[in-house]
Image (cartoon, rainbow, N blue to C red):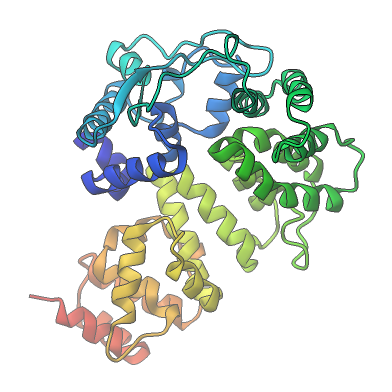
Length: 403
């Protein structure tokens, strides 16, 4: 467990594990081990989707950490769930679309066992069988499941049954609308298709809960494919492949789409999209560093956007958010453009990923380089004098931390 936490940083601390489990329980009503792996970025959604569609043989081969470490994590969360009074229930993972068969987790015994248990509140009553109890609520559940698992013909059949049993059902029109989105021709104007998918997201969330992701992902992927090669337009930032790929959870594709743009660091929306994608791929140390490098560049080139980003409750790097709060308490204050340099005094390792060509060539970059040399041990009076001439407050903060 400790080794796994070192790979993914503060996300998998004890408190963060409990917070993540509590969030999933609140959003989904139960704790599914695979949903936990997705939320912790130990399993890429693209790989999970391929496994569900029968294109990958096991989950074990797709994990971003050693199977034994992942088993440790799942067992720890299972123990926490049991302490909260949740009941472990066996679950069978089946394929989607035309692959309606049981799927394999792998051959690591503890991992297989941990992935086969869902934790949920004790049921108030036994769950009825669909074939013995054809009630409207069960029809509704079947439609939801069919849409999420991409069995559209099955969804149509169950909607037809719902029409016969309850033609005025409050969710009937919504289910029909989701089916219509799938049936819309591929020849729609791209801008219209984008607006349609954005408009349908709240409805999909209302009807399918967290499984709206499974329903919408292929629709966003199709749009992203259609947008491939389209040059980014600042006036229409969402009409770009990177935006659609992000909605589909395809983070490698997001990076590729962004990096295909010339001078993409000059566009805040592309910079933020790239940072988000790198963060979700942070099982690799280089990708975590790349995300933070993007956020540092945001400070240098788009300070107002950086301030909004760090202050957002949705900002994912909680450690960086905490440091940003401390930075804001400095007296006298520093400018947002100085945040990357100030970070050198708090976490020098953060700077390792900043390549020389990713640092401004003006005085901000010069101050950063000088402070970096001082912080990493190349400390002499000449460097101090140079930094004092450019940014005396940074030198004072550096000296204040010296023994």
